[in-house]
Amino acid sequence: MSDPDKAAAPAPAEFRPPLWLAVLSRLPFWFWYAMASFFAWLALYVVNYRRHVVDAQLKACFPEWDAAKLHEVKREFYRGFADVFAEIVKMPAMSADDFRERCELLGNEHVSRYTDAGQPVLLVTSHVCNWEWSLAILSLGLPCPM
Image (cartoon, rainbow, N blue to C red; front, side, top):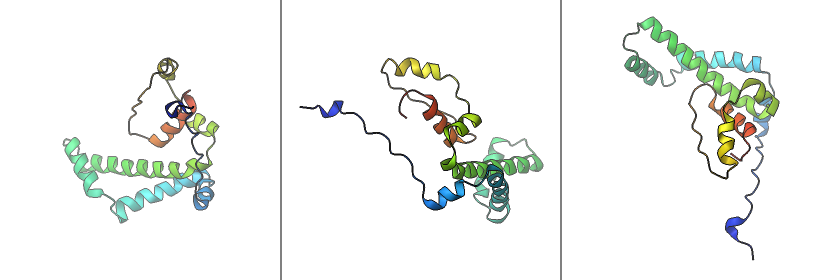
């Protein structure tokens, strides 16, 4: 009689993007970063995507900044936001080596010490840059399922 608690966990399913995403993800990075610049401009100046929220947060966090500095940081925020979007679209076509070329995992020996002992580990990361890529590099660089 088998114990259901001791049954092997099923292997994670491989992600299969829809055809349109698979095709778009094959376009080169230079194309996606150019598109990101356009999307950032569109979001900031045409659509005004959540602009009132961004303005309010920047003014609340940095009351000493003048209007020029606030606008510069706001433009950079929208550019970074659009870059992350472009990098997410690019992810389905990226290989493990592509991720390793762009991300570096440091300190994973600390995690291995606990997982090798059979202890669960909870990892917490910051929400900056491309946090989706950080999840991909963690799953490639750690010896345990994510």
